[in-house]
Length: 446
Image (cartoon, rainbow, N blue to C red):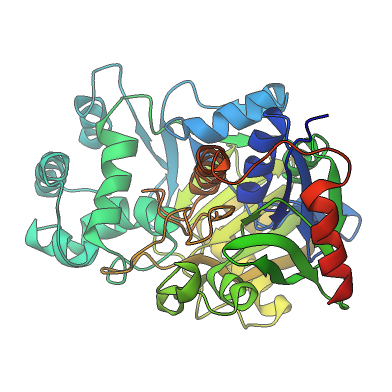
């Protein structure tokens, strides 16, 4: 009887889950190993004072096709909100709420009508932003940092604070003087210049954990609180994973979908495995402040804030808002009470109804290593390693996208496809225990 390959997937974030799903659809037997008690990695949910909250507010755009496909595949399309047309409410302490709304014109003209009525840009700013967008469309090999690129294209401080920073800093989770112009312009071209509907904002209306749970339910084995600390090898083949506590588990192939530092620790000698440059990745935190008021305070589903430590706020349910603070390296270590007060003060400054409302409770969630900084010159590895039955995945790998949910999902798909293409070189039809049984004996003996 032909035995289907057994693959160990290390890491239960969306990259690992997507890879596992793709492998399971081909009939492979998938065992998922996750060192924490939660599924979903950086896109998970947990309980705070009796309320299930996401670790942070994660949104995607209509151009994030791989993520939207995954949501549909897992049967959660009914729990997906997606804008019929791109529209954002912009809040400021100095002006009434403003709106940026796309028109029905083709891109990039679809933004022009919204800019014409946008009070936070002067007439000259609008012209200069428009010229920069035209330049972004044609500059496919930009050099240096995004901030320098914007200076070269004469973007004023007002244009930076009212347009470029509110959209690019959260997308890249880093200040614009630390990210490459190539990645910044990728975001602009993909979201705003390719298709008029591409920038429509979408998010799940149920906790993110439902997505991870639906994916994990389709795998053969899910092993939580099981940290993989190394690999068993036979020459250039992975034969099993080493688990904390000295145990092991056999496999015919392995997908490692963890951050660079953990990948380096698991591999031991990463360059010998064909994975270089892992120490070049620098992480950037994200902080989210969760506030529960005695009444609704936002008046819309979400909004961007100008001149505020809070870049975006989302009203998850009436009275419960989530404040997102990207590029939060100067905030992540602050005590929770200070972060809650920071969020409350930021909302009160731009929302009179929030200033009048009673804050019932607050909480802060932090991810110190939320994403890597896409700095100029950082080389992101692909899925392939020097071992034909070992591949890597993660939002930080070379997907062409910033470290987002979309990048994680795309990396998982690529990792699975890479294993499929390599499989002819190392899989054989077996009967009984076969190679997997032999590998398990090796793992138990170590």
